Image: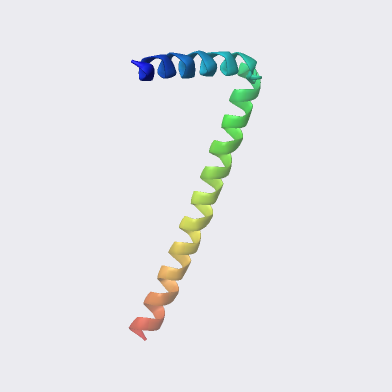
Length: 64
């Protein structure tokens, strides 16, 4: 039954540590999320463009 005490102790310590965390505000969370989504979309567009250009170049080289 010692394992039960250890689990309870662990859960209590996790709760206590979670109370010490400095959580960001809703405004900051939304702003950071928009930045991440924007960078992800820009990266996807860039890589998609590079892929498209390389596909055209390779097709021209292989066909000729």
